[in-house]
Length: 78
Image (cartoon, rainbow, N blue to C red; front, side):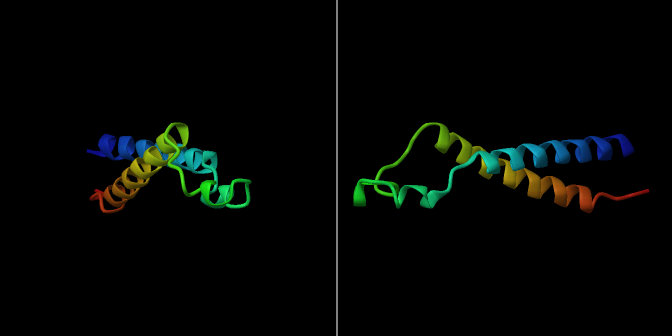
């Protein structure tokens, strides 16, 4: 039972490091406001591609980090 706990802790640390990396790779949402184009810049257009991919995986990793941390915290320690 102890080995499962240590595997979960290792996985939690791996998810946390990846999550931090993806958060730092994202661009700010307000970055497009001051760029040229007025109302057509930034918020008016959807930006599919890399930014959408990073945003989606950041959400997945945040949920996984929350769940793993909760499981590890309340794991019975013998």
